Image (cartoon, protein in one colour):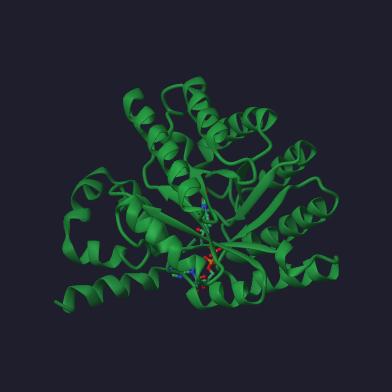
Length: 309
Ligand SMILES: Cc1cc2nc3c(=O)[nH]c(=O)nc-3n(C[C@H](O)[C@H](O)[C@H](O)COP(=O)(O)OP(=O)(O)OC[C@H]3O[C@@H](n4cnc5c(N)ncnc54)[C@H](O)[C@@H]3O)c2cc1C
């Protein structure tokens, strides 16, 4: 892992920076590249614009590691409101939640109650996605995911290709007919747990992606979604899908708002299922710094903002 990426991922966890950096105007200015605004209305407006390009949306309200039950309850109620707004607007939209924002640090049972209430309220033909957080949460996340999936088929989970364990996790999930969003992984993990070299992560992603597509072909994977901006990987997986007889619509890519916009539009115009994850909310600091770590060149946007005043 590059030194800059490690430094940025450490900064994402730093309490002092978390409290202070988000007040600087040039930081706030740079964030707008990755999110349309802090409010749900701003996120909904972005989804309307994406719909006109045949791109679907997944909403996520930024936040993690909530410290008390009342806050976890508030987040749950917020997501129930988001689902209501999606139903009313008729937008092709879903949501993605972080379990530590629904109270996982407080009690797995409480967190499950919240997740269950959210999935019950979602439209049955849409998926509620569960994000994957740092490696110390993987077991608990998969446990709760399995519980939720037993009760409701319309719940999906994110798996991270940088983890050595993901191959086994995928194999254990497939008999349950899951929906899976495969990503590379955004946290700072040691080499005992995660592949340190980018080419190994990419290769593992490709192998896992092929398994997901083969499982989808046999109806063992309800949604096989590729959460990546890596154009080469996407093309390799699209070629594999096409060789296996999948139509364009059955090839699903999910990307983050503001990243590879032209690629998002190209995929959608070719008939692939293209979905953009739109984040909003005021707790954006750690999430934003993880975006910088994915591409340290993004730091230049911030530097340019300092001098643009
Ligand atoms: C829909 C979605 C959901 C996600 N959910 C999770 C999750 O639950 N848990 C988790 O750990 N991670 C999650 N991630 C983040 C993911 O793990 C990666 O950190 C992130 O997607 C960058 O990896 P990449 O696959 O795009 O490949 P990379 O090899 O990092 O990037 C490929 C190319 O994409 C472009 N690019 C990538 N990132 C950026 C950026 N930040 N700014 C500008 N250009 C960029 C660059 O051109 C780069 O060369 C999610 C990502 C997506 C798209």
